Length: 209
Image (tube, rainbow, N blue to C red; front, side, top):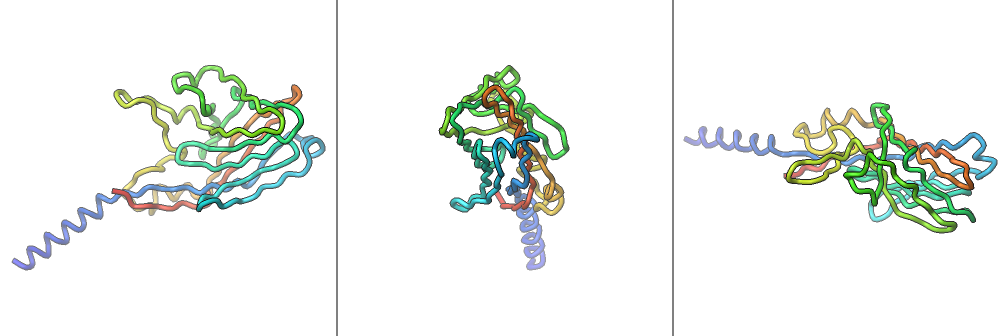
């Protein structure tokens, strides 16, 4: 009888372990920013700085034209952008793009655009001189509609979310992979393409019920 109880306990414990899911959290490093060839002459040297705020890692990029702080989350790239010039400038959203871990370029959308309209033309965002905006970049292919549930956002990376492998294989293959965001900034009728390159630096797993 005791051996049967022990066997049932082992089976029950294995069942509990097998039902444990793990959620992957990705830390992204901003490691490079590309600008137009003549940007150094026009906008000076560039700096990339790692910031820690309340346990969250952020990355700041700055030159004479702008300052932008990036902090990616589960499904989007949040940013705070400051116009450092004496002129208004615009983000040309219809020309912006996101390159995923597979090297595929995607159209993007941002905050304030209704999901149903994400494939339509998106008006530029204007940042007046010496002002700051908060926004977020999302690949349009990651936005989808579920009947009776509404609009949803997929995670930024394949297999991010739930798995029952403990993170031992499925999600870990994306460590070291790279993604890019291209933001076209128009100032005085000149469009400057800023390409922000991120690397998946670390992946942490948290057990969830």
